[in-house]
Length: 543
View 1: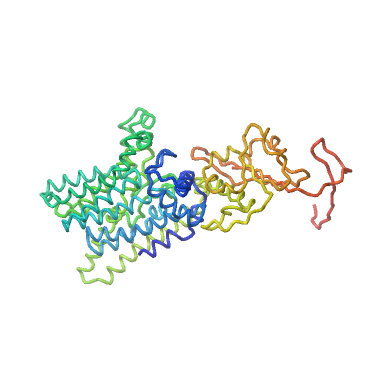
View 2: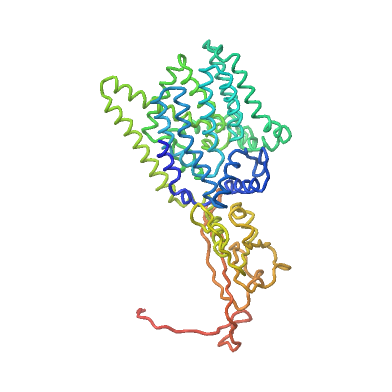
């Protein structure tokens, strides 16, 4: 199962999705700072980010270089490891078959496949949660202080993963209330005190930072909350109702519509897995009073939907990521019930066949929707700012330094002395992918939009100008070498999230010096253009 998960997460990792979104690039820039010796407990830039994923990508960037694949390799590794972690968790809470089915369902779930192929820190939360819940189940059964302490430590580390973990105290409170009402609370006392000790120990550094930088740690939730009048437009209750409908419908009706998070509108489950989830949900509800595992699963999944319900753009697959990996248990319970029903009637072969068919159909749907439909959709390239990576690769190929636009690794540099690249600072500042992908050693200079006076002297070597296409080139002519052959081409199309019509992202001008021409030109066209020579060729085409 882990091998299948790895295949889905590593296949064409550097190609699908294309581009590198600026949130990914900001993570990469912070990873470079980590490699330079900066080790913060929380990253304040780009509206604040938890550190775990950034430290992971610092390792992959250090290994592979400054490439999109280096950022996404860390995500693919986390996503792949989540599958065996889910098995361990479900095995500890339920049984071996439910564990196998849960791991299989998560392995082929398009939501988690995509999450494992992009450089967002959200991918770390399902992995950390699965490991913490696995240890929690062991501690609940063993009553060993060591197990409770380790569970607390790992749970505390989850807060270094991704923001929705902040809602888990609600889950634990609701679960404690359930244990109290069902007379099972005595199993938690007094050893569970060690859980609190471990949690506090792990949380102490982050808590100290948060107390001194509350606006940084809590600023983003306030911006997207439905309680913000700018979000609810003065209609709080109506907004809450619409958000709730969208959140509940994400599983079967309409999923996240943002193309960075999902094939727009695709529900979490295909129809077969959706039917199994309904069955598993009913089964868990019926068993919840007698068994703690289904009760905890329902509590966790229900309350971890709150982050997307109470924030704009529900359903939002990043804010809802906290339901993973326990969400996979619900269709697994439904499929387990169907398999058990066939086995009880003396049809074990049909039971295995049924499970294989359901999983194979879901796998085929994921493969088609992700690698064919989503990967080839131009909207995907726009959403991940593919034009920025094209520009960066063009600059790097010209200088012979840095990632050349293909593969996961920044290959050995082949510097081309004398070449210089100038990039319009409007492009450089808008796309964080550029300062991440273009090395400082490449000889790249950013240009002010207003004027080039006082800038670089006229160049003798080859020059590449990468400019905003809707301003003139006149202000930069002095940067070009004399007697140069100039070639121009348009960059790819791009489109912002709030824009309807795609447009050319940049224009590239390549100036290559040529031998001095004699001054007896055949014709002159003003002061700037002269005809030095011409050639006439005859062809066979009839007009």
